[in-house]
Image (cartoon, rainbow, N blue to C red; front, side):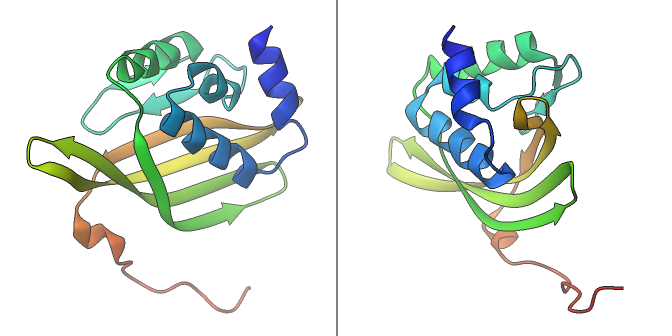
Length: 149
């Protein structure tokens, strides 16, 4: 029942709304809100830095549940680059992650790609793929085209 409420809350939103809800769920270690961001499809996929591919809601839920057992994840999306169409949106970004170490708070960087599809329930995440990054990844390489063809 909780998932249905969360899905209804997201319905009619945009990919940006789903992305914001996803990162808020990470910040609050809110597994139900996080899973409400995902499409209800068997083919959804998630890859964490240095990890294997998790396919399906059960595998994705399990890995985030394990992560949340250690506390929330303070990941902040930065430098978002979007490729959008009528029924899909791909967001490529840098996640700045705050990590607590014995020496105090440190920052780590992760390169992420979030893919959203417009479903019968509204916009939902279908893929979240991350890989290790560095502070240098906060600078973009190349240029964005200024003219549409």
